[in-house]
Image (cartoon, rainbow over all chains, first blue to last red; front, side, top):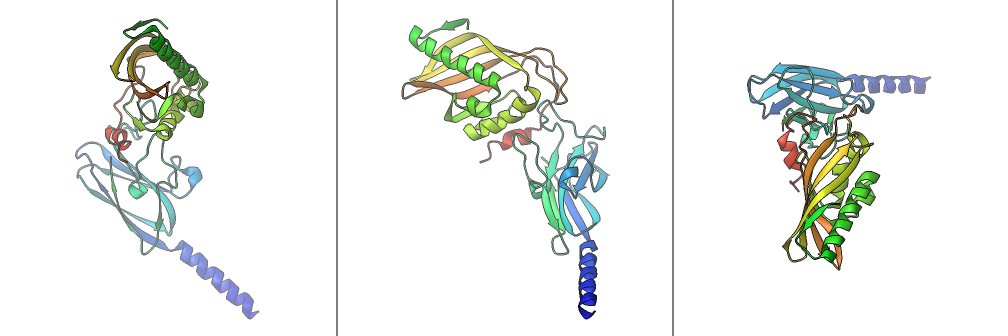
Length: 137
Length: 156
């Protein structure tokens, strides 16, 4: 009985740790001031990468550097940012699907000849790792 | 291929053969096979200005076009101007036409055409392509690519 209680309490505490939310700050640099808005998409699953964001935020591009704050559970997330210069609600891409608007990714990953993967842009978010600076290119 | 050449017929024919091989292997869409017409240190500047340096880069550069927008495309090359630029280095300028390119979603684009410049290098009595600078004059797609990403390819 004692061991069952111990196991349950361990399981409960594990669930609580996993569900702990961390305040994450993402500073976006190299923004073209006065041109549209800056959109951050954070993805929690590889399967939903570039499809359905776990959480998104948008700010008007009124400063060369903007800070975004999120409250999200600890874990691994991929970060994708773009400046929506024409405010059409999407990242414009050319024929080879090369972005036509400034983009930035977690780890400041720079794609080469192909779109980045979830793992390229993935960062581990925890109480001790919750500040990120990403430059748009 | 129709051509104007300032070289001997032997060198002209060897380089036309190489360019025929380039066209055949482009149309195969087999990346490994396509890469065999290039020198190991070849550079390829594509129609949107992406710079590939070396065979591995060149393969990655062509992966998306060969697997998506040029998957069913047919490429042809003609009207070659062939001249020497240095010892064992030949410059070939040609007109290309590409039919059946598509949008990334699969819609067929109008016939594309452009001018390609190719430097061929002779190593151990074999001609291979060491530099390509391609252009597309058809304007069937629009937009200026993100130049920072374009130049990222050179940051080694």
